[in-house]
Image 1 (cartoon, helix red, strand yellow):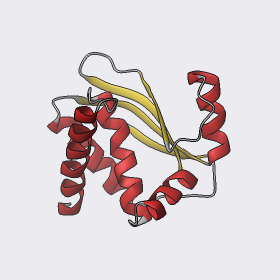
Image 2 (image 1 turned 30 degrees about the horizontal axis):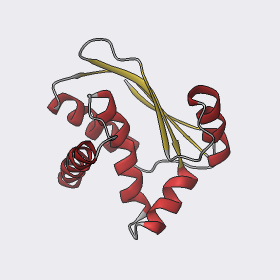
Image 3 (image 1 turned 30 degrees about the vertical axis):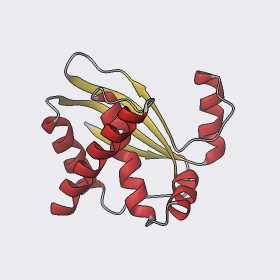
Length: 138
């Protein structure tokens, strides 16, 4: 089950479509959908979590907590809508496009994709692009 919660004045217009898309990506990667919780929040909320759980005193657009069990994807994904908006402006892309990239980025981490090395970043970006193309076809 994929759920969306909001800790800020933000809502999703297409939550059913996003749930279907996320599920399709998970299945395409050879996994099954478990309990996935998205929490949309502001920079302050996510910054506190980043300090508390990762000891990182920085702003970030996403934090993911992986509770996967074997091939079942379970976890919490926190997304700062403020950071996504800033990144969209910096990357000269639409907010919704950047938001969708971040939404699927957390799932791809749960599927085993990393983004620490240059090679991993390229692979992650390719998987994000592939997933975003799937969303466009839905």
